[in-house]
Image (cartoon, rainbow, N blue to C red):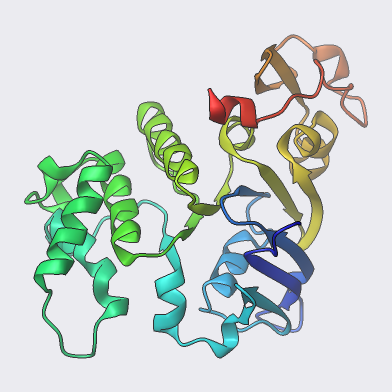
Length: 288
C-alpha cells in the first residue's frame, strides 16, 4: 500500500502586488525523499520556500504537513516538524558554535527559559554527528563558510525536526565544502530525513536527489525523477542555456555547456540537440 505523502502543496498562488509570483503550484513529497527545486533567479523558489515555512500566507491554495494545514499550526508546532537551513550567512554577533546549535531548541521552550542539561546533550550530539564537535567553543563569525553551513545543519538537527527545507545551501561554498555538504545530506536522508532544497546547480540534483521540480515564471514546468526531468531540452527551456547532459558511467551524469564540449554547430539552433547517453537512475549515486 502506498504511503500518504508527507507534504502536499495544493494549487499555491502568491503575489506581492496584483501580478502573481506563483501560480497554481502543486506537488507532493514523500518521507525520506531528497527533492530539488530548480529555476532561474526570480522564478519564485524562495517565495515558495517561505510559504512552506509558514512565513508567507498564500493568496490561494493550501500546504499540508502530515495531513495538517500549516496555516492552522502554530509557529512552534511547525518548527518542531520542519527546520529551515538558510543560505550561508555571517552573524553580526560572535555567538559560539554551540550557542548557534542550541538555538534549535527554542521551539521546545517557553517564553522565558534556560537551556537544560538535556538541551546541551542534544546540541552536543548534533555537533558530533556532523563531526564539528571541535568547533563548539569557536565563534561562529570566525569559522569557515563550510563550517558555518554544517553548524546550521546541526542547529536543524538539534531542533528535532525530520524535514529540512534548504534555500541554496551550497551558495558561496567552495567546491570541497559543497561536496561535504551534499555528503551530509545523503547520510541524513538514509536515516529517514526529508530534504527540500533549492539550487542553481542541476548537477547537484543529478548527484543526490530523488526528484527535481522545475519552476519557471512562477509556474510548475516539470516534476519527476532527476534522470527524466533534467534533460538538455528542459534545461534550455528553463534557463535559456544550451547544455548537454553527458553520461560519464553507469550512474553519473554531468551538465556541460555545448560551446565548452565542442558542440558549437548548435550555437544558433532554436533547440538543443538530444541529450547524450541513456537515462539513468540518480539513486545509484546516493547508494554508492
